[in-house]
Image (cartoon, rainbow, N blue to C red):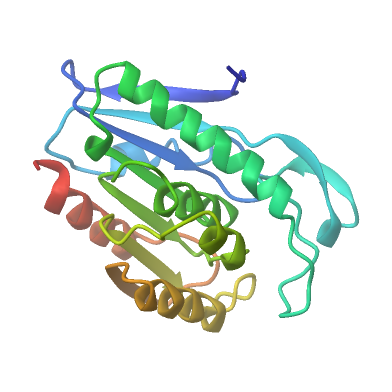
Length: 219
């Protein structure tokens, strides 16, 4: 089993819900630790924050940083790092398996990710063997759709929430909207929301996230 760097936090003594939360490009496992104090969930929760591997990133001049996969560009003709994406999907699935081995049902596991991390959790959750509790994609998009389709049927039984900033200059909202349309056409249930923000997370968005998590966490 691959050794995965990261941070875990448990809220409550009787954990029955796990949230695996992936950071964005260049960040690390600590990036979303503050979200714990901003959510008000009904369940006792284990938060799992993995750190991405270190790798050179083409759009950043080949600089080595924490990245879930390489990014060459966002244009329609830009090559995609399908192999790097697959490696990170494998990391997430290993984390899911670990939560199940610790007594959490797959349907009580939620995947969440920001930007690059959101792209990874979409692939990991929608192409997995078991239906999860849900997938939360923040300021993200769906890369390498062909590899997801080639792996088999895209799961339509996993609820997905996508949130994006209308002023996002890193991942344009048009790219996020196209990703949502592709998923809807494949039978995925999408809760879509936008906010007057850039490539970030804001308080209003966190309230929406909290409500979405509460909607299914007692299932």
